Image (tube, rainbow, N blue to C red; front, side, top):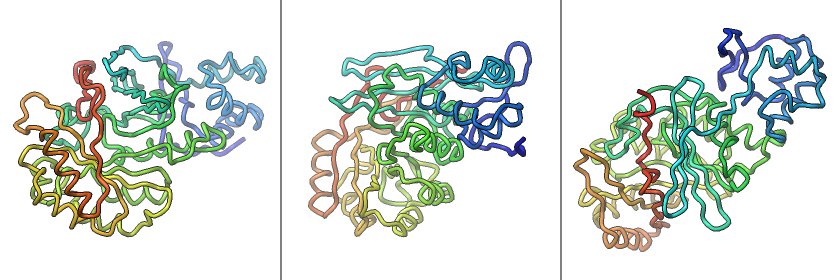
Length: 359
């Protein structure tokens, strides 16, 4: 028998309709699954068998785990659960983008976006229900914070995605601030990148953040996934006016921390920069941005603002965005204008919100 330990990155105990308390196992590592089966009186090797069924064979029920004895399967069914839930709603954009509404363990829901682009298929996953950061230009921020997702909730968005077999990339750019739910996010990345899991290269995964300092350092130390920082303004005062998180996580501190790491290898550092007319899109802003990021190996994604209700901000014109991009490139930075996808179904950057689904 194995000693019991707690698991921070996934919800361990839930109840079904019969009030039988069962452990959630999607998101557990092979060693954690081995410990679990030992506690249930099953052979140690059953832990690795279960892991393979979960992460390689994508089993959704214990009955599918046919190399386990019938008695072992019945024991697992009585004590454990696999959190696999299909989307409960779906919307399709004219450009091929799909948006799905997934139920979570808490009973709430989150939105997940699939973006096809030739041979590339990207899933934009959520890490929280709503968000605490309160950015002025973001519908998820308008929703407010309504709960953390478990590792199982995060993985379910990928495992139960109808286009799962077409996926080439994953971005944590959906609802929520990933570094505010770091245990669950790192737990999901471990499953996706481990040899016993999906065995993906971490370079196929990008995590976006406003720059929560403690979480940022831990993410950089414990993961090799790409990083995208939501910047949106080159000055402290300007960023604070549209991003309340700047007060707690100043951009100068964020950039200073990033300078401690080596970005010359395969890991990529990107800054996301949504453009607002006269707020952050002038030559003066480009000069300040170049000064802030000088000498840092990075790229800048310029993002068109998708208008949301009751927001005084207005998006920059394509001409202004093009001038800004060219200005940055002349100053030695690598800047591109990111294509907007799924705006007609409210799936584009800054538009995700499930408040109605949670009433």
